[in-house]
Amino acid sequence: MVPHELEGSFRAHHGLVFRTAYRITGNAADAEDVLQTVFLRLLRRGVQADAMENEKSYLRRAAINAALDIVRARQSDRTVELTDLPADPAQDVAPELRPALARALAQLKPQSAEIFALRFLEGFSNPQIARMLGISQVLVAVIVHRTRQQLRKELGSYRHRQ
Image 1 (spheres, rainbow, N blue to C red):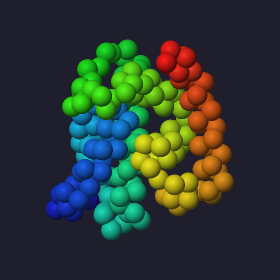
Image 2: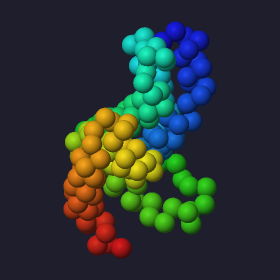
Image 3: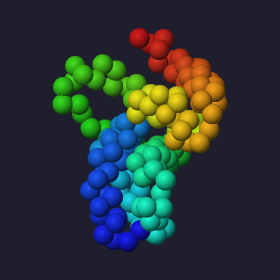
Image 4: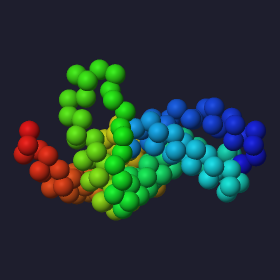
């Protein structure tokens, strides 16, 4: 990608990439790291904006994958993260659910984690996800169903504490 094209893409889509990453990582510092990673990868690969079939979809998927990489790396390093505090604690009903969900998502296969994030964190419908990923709606529905079952098992201990 040419630097002026990269700048235009960044200006147009940095919020989308940041929000997507924040929903998965749960903190602003990691979301900023994802933002930087996604656009640096574009620059290094020399991807032309007009060569991308759907720039927003590509950037959203790149943000999901980079955010999941950070969550997985954090788990393998066994580091303790400092998370941002919500502006209004009443809005964050279950603050311990976010890290538990992030850990559970990191255990999923990449395609399952991506589809779950698109469906439940980004709010896309199954038909939209199928178009984005170039797969059938039936496959999306099956993966969503199986992923929800797997996450229910992973988060079972959390649910029983409530």
